[in-house]
Length: 379
Image 1 (cartoon, rainbow, N blue to C red):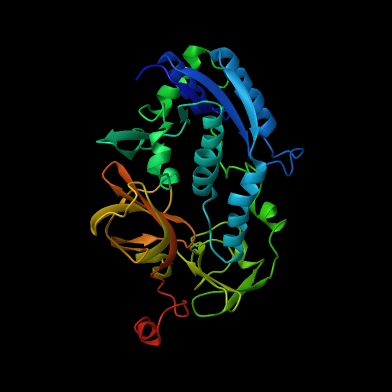
Image 2 (cartoon, rainbow, N blue to C red):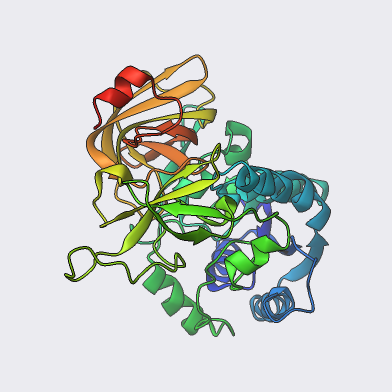
């Protein structure tokens, strides 16, 4: 591939910086683009956007590329944040990074780059693209601890055809070593955690600005009230921190930690259980909708592997797609499968796509959508 005009999303982080440098080494004409996706509270201590821009500009300077600053905050609000709040208000836990990639980084950014005359875009994601007889496959990044294909599973053939992931074959340690060798000013900058637009700020405090609070009872598995929750939207299945009920001991022994097991929206009750491996936290199956397939069509029914959350080992399962719905039956029960999160399918190193978890086995006496007969067998 001869030199192409490639627009790189420069975030101010080390991964995108090394991605840009590698492309330049390969002889491409590289332009950096800094995306600003959030501007509601730029003056607050948590908004690192200005620092990130300064870092991105310093990187562009060292590498010797131009940097453009573009504001996608309006698109972000419409396409990502509105959906994010709708999901939380409905009692689900969405994954805004998945939405942000599909709607902003590989849609608004891609469109903008094409208008700038780019042939390709590139990002610092740990993933790879492979072309096979005119079709594009999304592969896991080679560093298993950093692979980000989970967040990219909604990309289409048209998007992958235009996308490069220059650090996808590297390990993170190698990326940092290269950054130090090149003399990049952000070689030691720590990785950003937290949701793209929220950054490092306290999450519940942030959500409370946008969602109404309706406190209600916090119940154990016998239905006894242990305390009050501050509003169901602020909790997620499997959550352990922030419940405020650490002191309840049964039989005076050392108490096991409490976890959120189930949100009863009809009764505005939060069900909590003790112990990480409590049966109410385990699911042998799930159903997902809002499906998206990288190949453009779903895989044939059969044995595959899936992740129900990022940073999780692939779990063996039987997968079948019928009428726009994905059903996964796992070899081993999965922990804290959460409605609103993404279930992503893999065939070895190939990411096939996935969907949004809508329902899962929830061995809970008052779980929604279970018949009386099903519930009978659970007592």
